[in-house]
Image (cartoon, rainbow, N blue to C red):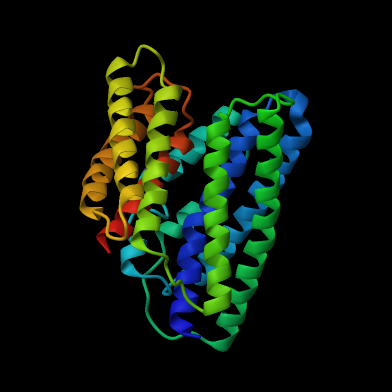
Length: 295
């Protein structure tokens, strides 16, 4: 096992995806009507559990993560704290913003890891796998009920499929760390195809959640969805080599669009059904994809 990679890659993974999972759980809970209180309670359980996981990851991360990840904007952005406060106000769902404050105080990699820290990371990874198995099962159950018209939620079926795919990717990476001691990434083609699809669906969700009067933003979201659909087709057609420069340029433009969106939503300048934390959430995922493409 390459100890340094095992520790840093595990922590970087949890700092990004652990937050993503806790927010998925919040979005699921916020989308249920009162009659689906049992599903809302399950979503709240996983929100709390992934919040604990993220808090543990933050505690272990100071001085153990790379400069690139720390400053990528995938862990937190300048908008995250306010987005959490506003979303808590709008939904009544508690959010531990102290974790966000602590993440802003993290420092990049320095020093060696002790055997005790490695055991702590292994325990964290095992906890993540257990929680992911449960959350994936919950998302699959919700999706099946929605598609069979057994329950109603404000979340699109595609959005539930979308967050299910992300949870499965997270689980795949944690298993890889436990089996190999480091992340042995699949081909760049697979990674690029995965995140191009995620970005395309972000554009579709944004378009579907904007107020009909936001004509310019609706048009921009349509264009991004079309551009990512083309990138995705090209990616799937490629035998092995892809063209990450094209994905990078498009995602940098999409990131800037998302930044303007978060600012507009937090400052009540955009009419939409988009929670401030959802706007920040999709921005962090764009930042994550950009870091992958730049590296």
